Image (cartoon, rainbow, N blue to C red; front, side, top):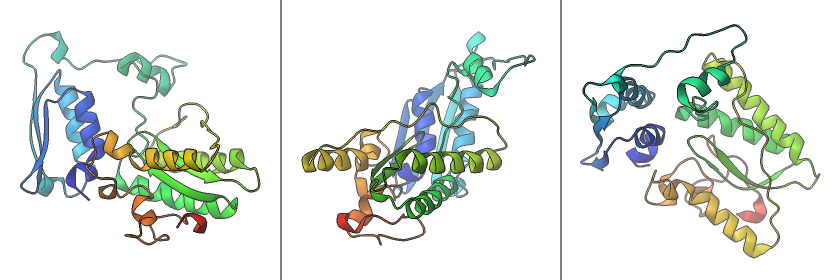
Length: 238
């Protein structure tokens, strides 16, 4: 996998904060530019350092814009009755902005283990999947008509794990899952293509096979269908 794919979370944060240059070359991922505040620069550094090998992989020159009130860190005084979502809404402008679902590769690996268990428990046929920085897509068939129970298992178990690991409370996922019925084979093909091309469309990688956290590699036969990082895909889709 490319360094840009490995550091997808960091790249996403840096781009959202307006860092001008992120470039992979000579075996290193280069972050360079100016962001609005030192707090923003620290957020990028914190994201980079979630990968244990960052000191060997990354060259960074991240500066805060000089002077002005915009360079001051924002503060929020917690009041009785406040929730984490309310605090995030006030300080970040989005009640769930701080809830990056897959904050490190270990979280993605745990999510896939949870997904694999749920697939087996609810007899769901998993046709495709992708894990992104703050969302995921699953393409499934549910012979038992139990999609809601299946998703409650996946969402609830991963939320409990993530809150425990990151010492948080409350909701991780914003709102209920969205289900779209696939009407026919052409629709299915388009849906599967859309799912595995998500990392390319987001600029994480150049090719879908460079992203480890999707079903693409297993689907095209360059990775085993069942492995510690790959849930059991439907045999009808192999």
